[in-house]
Structure formats: structure tokens, C-alpha cells
Length: 59
Image 1 (spheres, rainbow, N blue to C red):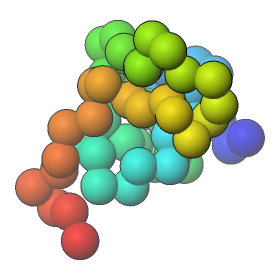
Image 2: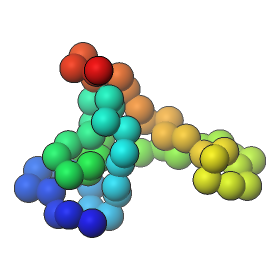
Image 3: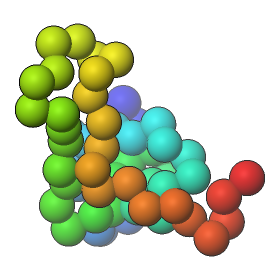
Image 4: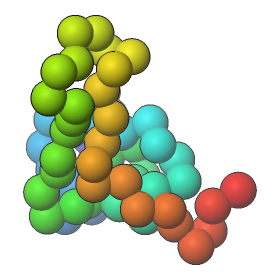
């Protein structure tokens, strides 16, 4: 995992959601905190980031 130069990046949090406003360089999350759900998830396909916010620069 590449290290971000952004001082607001959460250490250890890798984000592939390129259209999220909190996704910084090298796929690092810059949100103050994150929320991951759902509470009944049994696999990675059943999880989601509740912090996701669509970027105005979305493709």
C-alpha cells in the first residue's frame, strides 16, 4: 500500500471508491471517521462504506 502525502489521510485505510469526495491520492481516505456496514454482513460483498459521499468531480 502506498503512503499518502495528505496529512488528513487515515492511516491503514485503503479506499477504491474513486468517486468519493474523501478519496485522496493513492486511494487513502481523508474522512474524519468512517462507518462500515451492514451489521449482518457475512462476506466482503455484503459490506459498504456508510461514509461515502459523491465527489463533484465524479466521472
